[in-house]
Every structure is written in structure tokens, then in C-alpha cells.
Image (cartoon, rainbow, N blue to C red; front, side, top):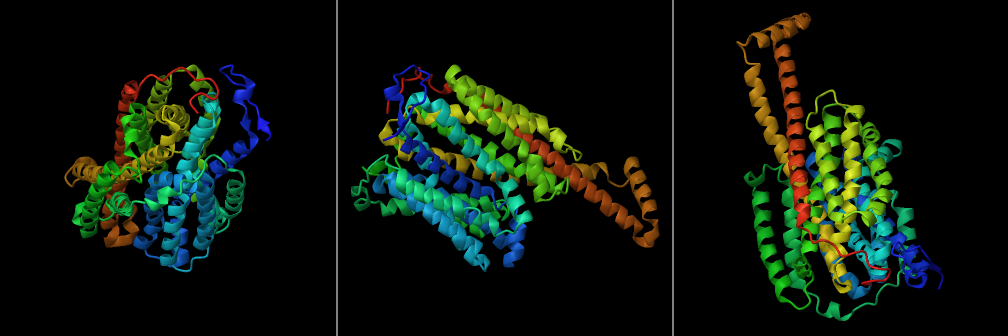
Length: 527
């Protein structure tokens, strides 16, 4: 078999360092599959209005196009480790890629909102199986000496895909139609499916696992994670525990959690092996991955909301403003790979967390006039820092686990990032709403009747609207009220950025709690 020989930084013999070319191409195909699955989380977010119009859906119904995908995906991600061991990586990944492609076509051809929600759920469930497999493969088939090359690739894909999702989605729906948000997956999906079936040869199926499949554990996990995702996604919109739906699904979540953890901790072959968390680096790495999810998905949501609601940008203009982050991530990935061979990964993480915190701290001074140039430095810091964080977190969290733990552990590790994103968005929306209300109350006190500056403003605006006769004063008051609401929302954005600064500032200190990694192993070591 042909081999690709890469020079080993550890100076290992070329024979040990050689990797079959077949496996390199197989890994590239898997990375493409993961990129599609993660991109589809966010690709519809900037184009929901177009889908809503195309399918004649209500505002409540259209939200489920996003929610259904996330709920289904979050159930599959931890389950994928067990299924890929049972079927083998080759069979499981090929089925996932082919199923994702078919469901993408079905989404594009949906004629009603109910059809769309069903196909999106299937797309999320099947597509979620492709994500953890890439992480497991990277740390199984490549020797430690190749991690400076491989780890930045999967780190870049895992963070770049959700970052550019709204940009790509906005462009496709603007240039073509919303159907292309899904049709764009078809050709790459077919290629990935064929390549996965033809090239992957990492492992053998363990058919005995299917006979011992834990259906009760699956019910518990689906109830727990599905309800948790629903509560986090819909909680803000439904006013949390004022809603009967949120109360009901919270109870389902608790019951599901009890059943899931009981089965996971008492069975010999649980669906999800939680014992990986006894590895300190994996436990802290998962915590950091959770917080990275908050920052990654939180800012991918915050910037478009600000640019849309305050600046009045459309999806394409938002994408053009936000491309800086993706560009910086792309350019920083090879630098992060090289640094991982020179620096203690904990120091790299501290630099990354610190840079992220600095970027959000600068953004906390946001005003109504901020545009591309004011957002430039925070976006550069965000893009560069994400890569400086992700590469060492991946290496420390997964690099010290034994090969037989990797499939389950990579599912758990990816789950923490997605849950971090869900928790982050729920917290951000809640903080935005509560802080906006607080700032409106304070601003109303400042512009209350009787205050000289308020009276002068009302008089000036009333004069401006004098052509409208008796309606002039009410129009002046309405304009002042609108300005107060806008200013309150901007102040709330500043508060959210300050909160994110605090989270990442604390992570700088927490990086010290990870175990100091061993010296880089020679090629082939440990695997």
C-alpha cells in the first residue's frame, strides 16, 4: 500500500512515522463530513425568514427548524461512540454521511413546515454521528508526532463551521434561494459517503454490542438530553417556568437524567461510558469545551443580532462584516499547530482565554455607532484566540486517553461543546431581556416629565412634528421611547460582553488545574 511520509518533529524513524495514504484520504473525507454536519447547525439561522415565507409558517413554527436539528443531534453525538464500535467506523460513518445527504435533499423539497421539521430532525440525528468519529480517528490513527498538523485541522473545522454558517447561509439564500441551504450538501455528501465506504479501514465491527444494546439507557438519554435542549432553546421565548411546556419537559429531563445515569453507572456495556471523566485532563478539557461552546455559539449569535436590530443590516451585510473572525481562525490554525510543539499547552490555553476575554471586554463598550472597523479588533482577537484554545484543549482532553476509550470519550467531548452553546444562548437571551428591562426602567426615570433636559427634547421634537397637528406631541414621546428602548438594548449587549469576559477570565486561572502533559511522544507512541 502506498504511504505518505511526513518528517517527524521528534526525529523518529521514517518507517514508524509513515502513514498509509489511504488513511490520510479517509481522514480528509471524514473531516469534510464533520464540517457539513456542524455547518448545518448555523447555516439556516440567518435565513429563517426566507424559509418561513417559503413554507407559510408562523414565527413559533419556524423556530423548530433550528430546534429540531439541535435536539436530534445532541442525542446522537454521545450515542455515536457505541454505534461506531458495534458497526465499525467504516459502516457507521458511511451510513451517517449518506443519510445526512438524503435528508438534506428532503429538507430542500419540503412543501410544509411539518415536513421540514421532520427532515431537519432526521438530518440532525444522522449528521450528529459524523462529528465525534473525526476526533476519535485523529487520535487513533495518527501518531503523537502528527498532532501539530492534525489537531489544528479538526479544531479549525469544529470552530470555523459554526462561525461562517450564518455568512454562508445568508449568501446562498440571497444569491439563489433558501432551498440551496440544503442542496449545497448533496455533491460533497455523495463524495464523502463513497470515500468513507471505500477508504476507512481503522477497526472491525463488534456485533455483540448490538445484542446487548441498552434500550432503557437510550430512552433515558434521549429524554434527558432532548428535554434539556428543548428547555434551553425555548425557555427564554416561553418565559421559563411560567410555561406549562417548560415545566413538563423539565420534569421529563430530571426523570430521564436519573434513568440515564443509573444505567450508565451500573451496566458493564453502557451506551455512554462516563468513566472517562475520571481522567483529570479529560474532565477539565470537557469543562473548557463547554465554555468554548458558550463563547463560540454565543458570539456567533450576538454579533448578527446587534448588526440586524441596531444597525439594520441584512444577512449578506452581516456575513461580510463577520468574515474577519473566520479569516483569522484560518490563518491562526497553522501557527497554533507549530506553537503546540514549542509551548506548554496550558500556557497556550491561558493566552487564548486571555485574548478572548480581552476581545469581549473591548466589545463591552459597544454603542449604536459601532460598525465594521469598531468590531474589527474584537473579531480578530476572537478568531485568533479560538484556535489558540481549541488545539491544546483537544490534545490534552483526548490525547492522554487509551485507544479503546476514545470513541465514547470523543462523543462526550463534542457533546459538552454543543451543550455549552445551548446553555450559552439561553443565558445570553435571558440576560439580554432582563438587563434591557432594567436599563429601560432607569432610562425612563431619566427622561421622565419634569426633568429639564427631557422637557427640552420633547419640545424640540414636538416642534419638528408640528405639521401633524395634535399628534405632534404623542409622536415626539413615541420617538423618545423608541430611542430609550434602543439604548437599553445596546447597554444590555455591553453587559453580556462583560459577562463573557468574566467567564473567560476565570478560565485563564483554571487552565493551571490541568495536569502537565508528558513530553511529546515519538511517532507511533501510544497508538
